Length: 252
Image (cartoon, rainbow, N blue to C red; front, top):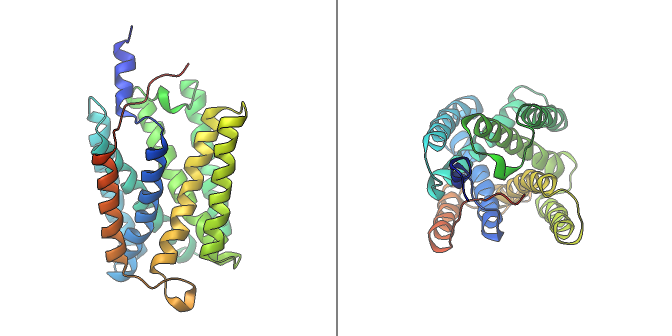
């Protein structure tokens, strides 16, 4: 019999193929949308980070206060983390001069620290355990760090190492495929595989987003950041309203 505790899990989406498709679209949107505000509109990384931080906080508050799972609210919050992650990582890497490698290492430590304290406090970091304001707080802080790390990591691999956007996309896509194979063919923890995949979808979205809007001389397609962002928003909306979304339920 389902308890009131389990009903609260309806705020967390079931992890399906559609979930990962929307996640990749959202992370790509985070890159093009963040760059549109900070670069195309010339607001700079710091001001853009402040704007997206306010949107992120507002979105999380709505998400936490919601009684049930609402796909639109959830994915708006995810997009808020990706756009904030883009400008925050760019600010740390470029404006503060930390660099791609230094920024990635710092954010990796923060992410691992968030997961450690979440596990130490709640006893699990499984997505289907997010059933209280406290676990939701850990969940969104962890996601915020993972999105920011993903941006820095994508920039580091694509530009810092000279690999380029397309080869970087192939690299991250291959790593995600390996994780998918591990999910179906091995007994590796599904929680560990989920967070590994969740983290890697961000740099994939980052390099794809950069490939779309960076200048030709820089290895991109020089597409309009605003146009690319609008297209991605439309695709996300279609996925949300056309494909069924269910709440996550306990698998153990």
